[in-house]
Image (cartoon, rainbow, N blue to C red):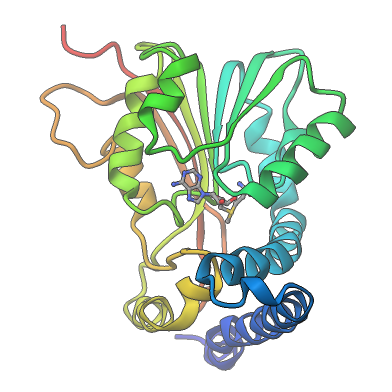
Length: 271
Ligand SMILES: C[S@@+](CC[C@H](N)C(=O)[O-])C[C@H]1O[C@@H](n2cnc3c(N)ncnc32)[C@H](O)[C@@H]1O
């Protein structure tokens, strides 16, 4: 353990506190102001949540996009064909796609406020003709299957989404079923559980505490990359992926938000 890492411990371990404080203050003040102007909504938890997330998510998503710009650019240029982006948020990733390779992009996003911003971004980027929005959760298989058949997707994209979906393993397994056998690829960039025991313990404390309530359900301590490689953790008797390219984004072991990126190519399945 170097001196540099020891010095970084308080900085890195307290960074989420600072982010929580700023987010909480912004969300609370905005929600209080909203309730003063709409007193009839004051008893509805859903309205508080919508107002809180509506105030905080634009800042958080924009911050994350800024910090991960290079990695996203590098990763999303590999997206091709019919693309399904899960939890597209406010559409920050759309600008990184190479449109010459894309046939169609379906963006799944359940949050109403984000969907409005997402549609504005699609229009701003002049992507209306290739981009469709599915306002639902990835668990809503019936809605997804309305436009998307099993084994029909060339590229599934998950950018900081599997940290938030309620049952990530089930979601990955479902996404796997949508990919074309032999060529369909899962592209992901997610923050994951730390491999360092102390940092992992700190992630657990944050996640079990207030973090997921303030951050729209996000959990810091998920083994997302491992679950992706497992194809959702379901035991299959055949090779799940024919290509596996996984990279950890370099960072100190004290980092509470270690990121992993990956491109996994679906195998042909059982012989
Ligand atoms: C941390 S944000 C990331 C947004 C976007 N991918 C980005 O990088 O800017 C996670 C997104 O997942 C969405 N989400 C949450 N639960 C979901 C679910 N069950 N299915 C699909 N998307 C979901 C949220 O509404 C939110 O927009």
